Image 1: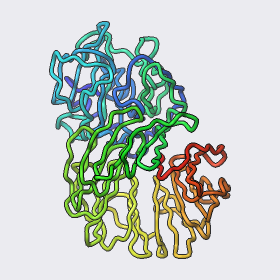
Image 2 (image 1 turned 30 degrees about the vertical axis):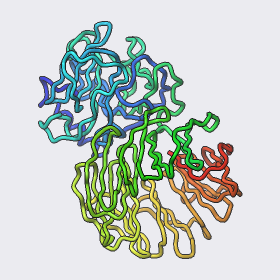
Image 3 (image 1 turned 90 degrees about the vertical axis):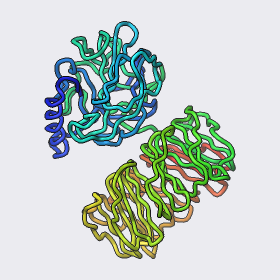
Image 4 (image 1 turned 135 degrees about the vertical axis):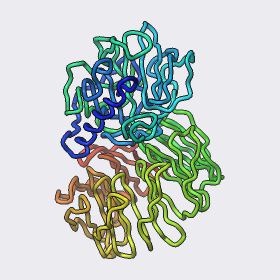
Length: 504
């Protein structure tokens, strides 16, 4: 949004738009436009997928701000809070307005760009290089409170054909103006609209300029990470060569493009992407959990978290025996098995349940088991819904919930108010995503897309199974790792002697 001289007008427009989105009036659609390499880097990490919440010409995007893009992590939510903001082009800082988190940079060729609603320490005259970190996305703030983002964490990204920003020379991010974002569709002035302005609802998976565009720009990037002894390897496509990432490891986790490992001394290391730089994050880590938004660790009973790998740790609890994270949602139990939840580094803790034997988180769902009873809720202050009374374990993915009973019968439902389906007997292991249900009986693997679909046998030699999106992985008795995409995709034998693997 433009935020200098018309802050009050823009804020009113934003709040109207937000109320419509939250009320379900403005659906966010994904446009199938094909991405291309372009010539301007995205203002975020290559490989990350962001969403155009509000596009050209909507609400406050008028006048000098007509061709602004409000970029959010997903949907029109706050999942971008704390994420790294990067310079899309080389340039020199013109000014930074703290009241709006508004960074203006003069670029080559007489152009300028702005990245607004961010935290930054850059001062006028500072030179920046394309791809350089220039700050982080500010947390959602109440109206009128810096960075005045109207209550939604986002980047307002805009380009002008003249220096010093916010003038009459705004231009769209398209090929005709030599201003196409690498990894984005050609965001022409007359593109489609889903209600929040031109191109609203369009995902952008950031690419390096000149690289091959993503094949599925609406899907988050997917990695395969595996450990053989103390060595960790990763790749994206099944047919690609493995990249050796680390030695001296005892375990590994991955969430989208974020990879975290732990060494025998319990020091954890993290990087963004296969080609990213390793950061030494913390020592004496007893447990860690990773999402695309957060890294959360437990050292004894102390829980700490951070968003950016280079940022400071924030201690958020001191009485934990375990910890989980999903998106920006964090949960832990204390020694008395009391369950506590919060959203983000600076959210308030909610004591939500007692005597909890097991819990699972999704960004919009909490599921917990007390003995054989399963309960679920969406918001922390919501009442618990009793879902089942015969469970021994449970899983949750998106809005999908699964549990097994003492006889190893598998039950699955979609949503708290959905119908339970008894989908299989004698289940030894299962995995869920919003797209798939996969279960193992002995060495046989079966999959289906919905609780009422027919099972498809997909393998007969498995000792374990994992699923992420439509990607399925399993190892056989010889620890050979096999992967496929979807129920009918071919299996790829991708690695031997695999001790551990993780799919994003």
